[in-house]
Image 1: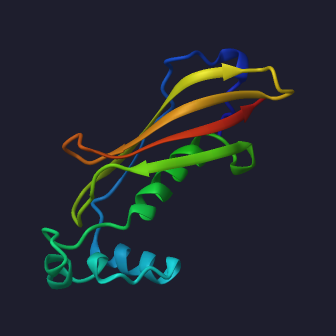
Image 2: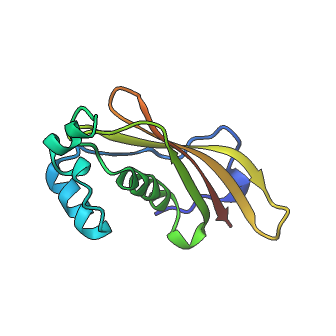
Length: 139
């Protein structure tokens, strides 16, 4: 992995995208086991419909994990200082998720060279599923 250098980063610049999918039910079952989130809305179409959903939905935290993979494909994990997101849409089995990051600011004032990234995870139709922020410290 070639390390980005702080002095070469500009506001508005995009980091390389990360795309995964289509999401399948095996992946949902494995994530349920790993996370302990066995809520039936993520595993059972009938139960999801009973809850008012159109069918099984992908765990929001799985989508957030994909945003995390976007970051760790760009820099080593120890360079991530902050990472947050909010859920704004639902993903469904069969969706392909693309994660994007754009440099929102650069700051060298606190003893570290840090960039703030605006993050987005979207489905194959461009519908936004998550929005987030990350602070990454660079050399």
